[in-house]
Image (cartoon, rainbow, N blue to C red; front, top):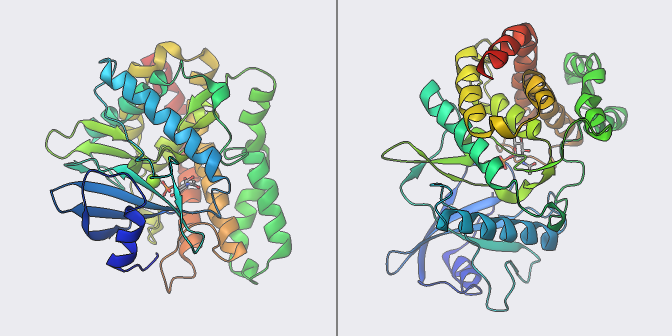
Length: 366
Ligand code: GN1
Ligand code: MG
């Protein structure tokens, strides 16, 4: 996490056209990629400042063009009463751009702060997770008539699991940090599932699954709930909104939200995929998005939960082998990414044992 002085934060915020004057700031630690700060102001204004990770997002122009267009589109939907979800707003800079590059080359943007909201890393309430499913389903539906050709690929091949697998094999081969010897069982776990990695991309290439505007990072903590009513309030982290498969969003939501433990839980006996949570999300999601989905998209929902867990684990393991260059890790914890990968593989194994049950339930809802 970046350490900045109040003076530096104020200097950055002064590059943007804001309604209020920043007087203090607080770092926010959620999120594995960007640096985030809450900015508090003289007249009660609150903003969210983000330092964009340019190793991950290499083309800020494409990134901010996507984010800004999607925000504007969703704001109109909210204004027209099509949804009760609120939307993020990107404040423009004084030079008209949506982001500011400082003298050190760091890239910044400012969002409105969504007040009186909470987010979760794990949930125990099926009701809340059902509402989460409804909100992500609604989000997808709201973007159904977004002109897809206006979106660039922020991270090319983001959910191309076969490509992720190839990159992983390359990292195993190079073993730049000499960590391979510490993760052989995990490497074998992935290799045994090589065939799974291209299932969805093959169906897409064969024209059997439709390309849609999707969120691509439907992690549980990317949804904000109203602190009082606990109704979903806002879908955040729009950096990876781009053309994708509905199954990426469904699978990733199950991976993160139906898990019974944190992503970096070290006690693997605590990690499993809760059937109760799977059922709750599926119900909520299908109630909002179901009539827009094809039979094949619905059929592959259980598999997508397994695949997205496998993919995320592959990415954590690859980053562990590469020396933690992508995901933020806790200082002094060199195994952080390995620990994360293990929780994902535990989920994969658990989902494998529940696939039939998941399929039977999914079918019963439609
Ligand atoms: C990252 O930024 P955050 O924490 O919402 C990552 C996701 C991973 C997730 C795993 C752009 O999401 O793809 O699933 O970590 N985002 C990017 O925790 O790589
Ligand atoms: Mg996030």
